Image (cartoon, rainbow, N blue to C red):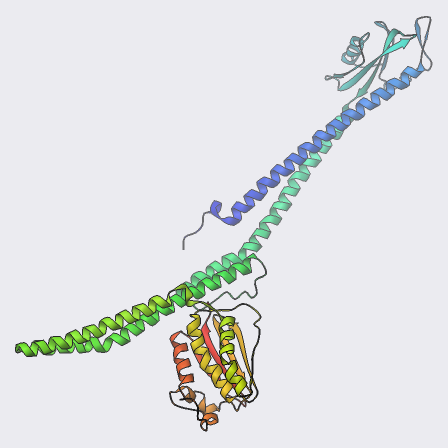
Length: 447
């Protein structure tokens, strides 16, 4: 058996698809989260700067064109980031790096705006100082962006770690689920391969379908049933062909050999050739008959609904049962069952058995249909005298009756014998169960 390449394996392909899709989804989620976090922290920093500027403006008083600060900001620790300019002249400034101070001075006299100082990781916010409708200076507040950057870096590291952990966990879970889900398929494949070489009558037998795999098993069981039925037809055809042609071929060869042993007169040759032609015609008829029978058996109508077969027979025998005072009933099957023979043939097999039960049953005859592996069982039970142990086989011989039917005047004793012969020709059988009640079981191949 050839091995499947890893990348062509269904499990591997499904796992790759899931992992790629999960990677794209988690990557997009991680990128979106960090983008939203950066936007949120930037907006928070801007809001803080505006609030700080509004608070500082509330402390500034303009008297005679001069700017006075009501409360001096404590800059002993170097945390204050507030600049006050009158025109371009510095009124107040914090202790900061030269790059930050230069950027703040460049905002003096300008409009309201936000500026980031990349070298010092600081954001500045400039707002005009207005008195009596006239601009007298500029207020600049600053904020270090280092805490916000640190928060974003930590969030990025955490989101990437979560991304990798989720990818590993979900990928492992998907791998385990795919392996568990597809293991029955691999087992069914191995079983089918072994059965094809050793045992064609084996089936998966997964029971009532309840998911995709059990429905697949039921479908494969049906396929195996049809393949087995086809092989049975071929084997039966070969056996019948061999059996039926043996005698006419032997006669033809014997007649030809006798004719060739010595010189004969023209009338004698004519008689020998007549015998040869007669045997050849018989062989032709046998071959045509067997081929026609084989072709008919191979047609799609070689499959029938077992319940419909039983219903047809119950309907056909209901009048006879009623005339004898016998109640004829059909049990509903638990599942839909198909039989692997033509409906007409199945009815011909079942009819004599049900008719026999109606003849010998006292008050009740029950017919039931069930499936047992690759076989369909038609059970026919009656409350008659039943079949004795010693008669289980003899009652199926032509013109032979059991002890319960020897006093009967109707029938020729051929019904059960014909039913068994037809059933066995279809790879089935008809058997009698011993006991105080009559019970016959018709076995036919399932489809």
